Length: 442
Ligand SMILES: Nc1ncnc2c1ncn2[C@@H]1O[C@H](COP(=O)(O)OP(=O)(O)OP(=O)(O)O)[C@@H](O)[C@H]1O
Image (cartoon, rainbow, N blue to C red; front, side):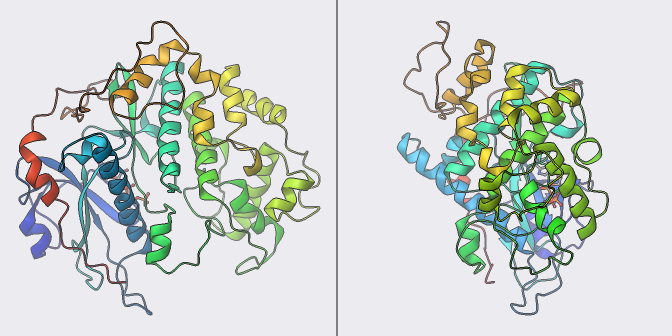
């Protein structure tokens, strides 16, 4: 197994598969074994970031999104450790308290001055046999409901921890196994995440929210696009308003849910970005507001939305949004109601926790195995399913970590595997795996 670049760190420590698992704009992800781990036969996903040209001011070769991702996973690790202590999970086993819908982090290294490929990496749980939600075919209506419920539970958790994912898309959600026959999602790619820790580390001014459009085409939100429509040269315009990325997560999740429910593709069929230019975003903005409706006076003022913009478009209403969703092929009235509170203007968007308590989910006893799984993992829902068949939650044994079979089944989703074998014997090294050299003096 060879690693391109052959630097001492990566080729010495990891045995890396030649063929990548996947690649993104700033990284390549490989299946790898870590010789420093107690069980050197255990496989991980090694995300190797591309070094950047040294930044003029700080001389750093680390792309800011890599820092974002690393720090978001730091925050999630702290949350898991705190939860583990509260649940009397012994030290070293905190990953048992990690949220089931977020990929687990095992270590990282960020050599901030190095231009060598392989000096910036993130070691993640291997989601073996996983495929992106966007590539799953034949998702049943009930699977689609379970997927949306899981997404909302995951977002509620992230948002409670003051993290916005910032780039929810069907490519950044991997499906790797099933709970009682239902798909289990894992969110990856926290490169555009928004959280106080990154803002502190990178000296961003305080206050939540970004300005301007960023993310994956197909998932841009109305609030990030309107300044492009409002001004011929919006760059640096003081009229750019900050927007709350947590609300953006809700909109993007709604778009993913529409994709899953209808089989349409966000970037091709729903909200295509014709050209990645200001003019292209301006056109997309018109399309987005045609879908959501333009803001009424009050919301327009709150968004800093100029008077008169898109005056020919009707004012936003839930009924208008539902009618358009029906035309796209969403038929279920419950789902229509949930989506009309997600794929709408920011002022009308509900929180992930509120949405997870919608009767569409809570009145469906068939969703019980999924809800029960969260209770078993130590994440009780903010609601209870009103059915006599639901057993009362018992005092929890230590949640068993999940284990993934090495190969996908021939269905569109892979299956749950046998129980884990390594966690107990890994105790010391489990912690050791996090004590990797961190050099991010940015
Ligand atoms: N933990 C994992 N287990 C298995 N495969 C993974 C894992 N993490 C990432 N991948 C694969 O690698 C691909 C790229 O990962 P990721 O989206 O994190 O990279 P990125 O460089 O941040 O991408 P982008 O340019 O979209 O921001 C994913 O689409 C997936 O196929």
